[in-house]
Image (cartoon, rainbow, N blue to C red; front, side, top):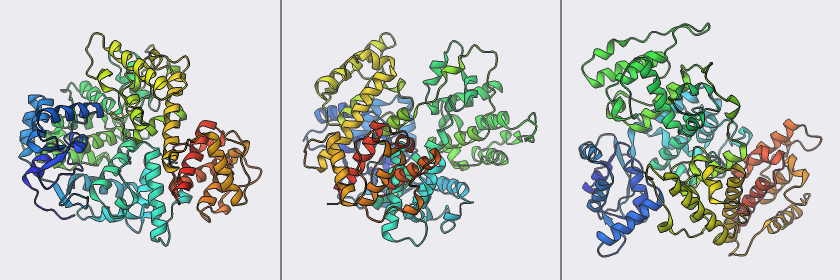
Length: 626
């Protein structure tokens, strides 16, 4: 984690934004067109794949004169300027003059002299957050508290325990604690913990395709921070969702329906929440958690609004001292404001400098944490609201959503049906299952104000056509309109076939391209079970699957001795015991290296589709042994 001087090119690239993320820059002063996608993300301008492809084509025609797939920094900067407004171009120039808080670390990728950078501020913020979150956890005593000014974090993440614990804090019950190796760790048991952590992170919707256990073991800074941020953010934003927090309905605007509000992303809702309170205090509203909060004034007013007033019996009032608002110096004002946040127990994620510089990631985290502790919203009483229409997503919907997000679709899917209404996510999934998409036929955002739905509908029609003709899916009775309108049953029918094909493709790649279907999987499972002298299954609807024993037996057949049968209830199971077995089975599958998306309840209820994916993922893991 030492700091080294950056080359001009690298420095200029880092200067593109305040949020210094992982980035490969070749020592020769160019990047390859394949890296463009990452680069736009780093420059705080994440673009969907098709836009990047359009830009690559454009670049190849206009700038990459020798067609060698390499783009110089100047070429990139020119495109970047073209993409963002002149306002952002100003920030861009200003940003290039700032270089604090950026550590470059020599990397070990194929290109000679690759460097990765990571943000010192993020490291400090995450260390403090983890120290606090896990301070009472006995299993972490050997590594906590970490020193934020050192590189403790990167070594501490190396045995997988902290990562498993943080995943469970973000999405409780994801990992069965019985499966985490905690005592007398060896390279093998550490590897298992890291498999468990990565496959579980994937199951809660983290994009982990480019991160392996080795990266965590070696403490590769930018990958560790990238993964931690995804895990922490999922936890921070989990409750900013109407079905989990009905008081958010107070944020409805005039003329807006409940349905409109349910389409809003958690980040947007958070901004609305802040503005709702600023409005109540007759203060100016903010448009972001970066440039608009740098002077700490909005934060002061927000803290003052949400602090307990003493009108609830068991919560004593906390009066915010507003005198720091008169402070002339931004940095000192930020420090005074954070001292007040500390009185609410909410001094987290940001240092005064992060506020003054407007670090978007850390400020989002600061506000989300404040919301989770002090939402200060009342559920509206007299409004004409159909409360029954507020239902959370089903388990199946959540599984599909997490699966898509783990594959890195862009933008992130927050609400299953709403976010698919223009089919752009579906096209990205087709590409993941090797179904070619003709992007010239696709309408891309921003859509015109008038007729935007027509453009989206055309996309949905093309998506259904691809499914029928190219993917050879069974989509009887499914039309583009069903996707566009978010018809649940028919949308799920398409998503299931995408997930199924994705899973089968993995098996076919491992098995030299031989066709795989349900029967192939059942046959393989039974061969393994027979060799291990265990009971066979009749198929994915077999009632014995509700005990999870066939899954546990298969795991033990793939990795002999891995299942601790003394933890497993074998006969006369109650529902609770079935669920306990299932939690153990799903976590054990992930621990031996199977990327399982299904949930324990899917086994207990013997949901044949999800059961199929569990056995398919285990089969993939079993075939990798060779």
